[in-house]
Image (cartoon, rainbow, N blue to C red):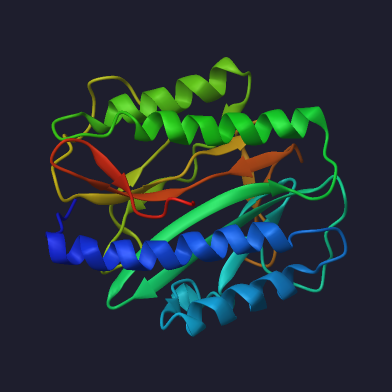
Length: 248
């Protein structure tokens, strides 16, 4: 994994602040009756207004500024005229390109009144990310973090998605290495100050198996079970970590 100097991390911090701002605002406009394309347009306008660019748009041919995934849609959902209904849960995944560097983050939010089961899924997925982040510091093995995320998810009888991973990030949206949400304590690379990467637990209430729809992008749970997704861009600091996409 490439390390970044303080100037580079400062730029990523500025991009992450823009990203955190639009994630928070996006969550606030989620309501029954709004279409996912309306949310995407709102996101794109906000990013451009803040003198940045959407990282996702045209990345490997992707046509939108965000990925908006509903219920069993795990990731990479294509914005459309489809409207949200009360009881849905929706994952919003956004990347921001600012002054030559990318940041990437995602949240899952409720639409109207949702079930207690859905609330728990969102809570556990977010908790797994938060608890994994707390272990980040120089000389820590990445496997310790992966194992913590996996344990929290599986202790709640949910499934960790194995076919998709977190990743390094910086000048490129997806840098080496891939960071799965499963792992063994003491395994993998040793973290160093200046590393920047994305942790992103993706969780299913049912099977861990996923399929990609005919649109070539949308990844859904194979058994149609409810899914959730959280992500942050993090920098390893001298004494620990900094969440560059932290939402106020």
